[in-house]
Image (cartoon, rainbow, N blue to C red; front, side):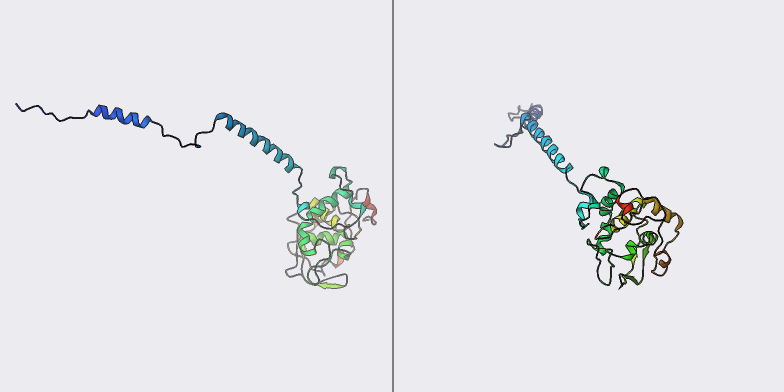
Length: 240
């Protein structure tokens, strides 16, 4: 028989138990990096909720509308109202208030003061195109205008012409803008209503811009329609 061996043979079962014990040990956390207590987390949430409510209250008082971004000069005219809400204004003042915001799409060319740019963009202030027949004005803004034109005795020829806004604006929005330009910068004329714009749209089937010659027959033509009582009806004779 061979002599018994005196060498130590480790028990694999003991090694497994030792490994499991080591893996269960938690890593020591460095000072200052311990998890926050539940009380601290709760107080943080309360502060965040209160701060959010304060920010919402302040934001709701701000006016970030297009009329704020584009502060165009309307001029000193009592017919524009005293800054009251739209609900407290008569139809004419409401149209002016809304039209001032919609004028942002026009102001880049015709400028905030309505004077335009010499040789390129004609003025709206004192313009016979603005103060003349409502039918010509509606048709111009509906489909645009191209080629040389004369305004207040001066020639203008905008590169590419003026684009129409009929597809981009509703009848009401377009009427408000036209009422605004007809009663700003010293202009004074009856308001143009949504119904007037709709009447022109229903009869005008056109896909291209107008020319000055094509619109000559509409220079003094007014679209028939009821104008609400108020400054917009008495500023000038209503359409017959």
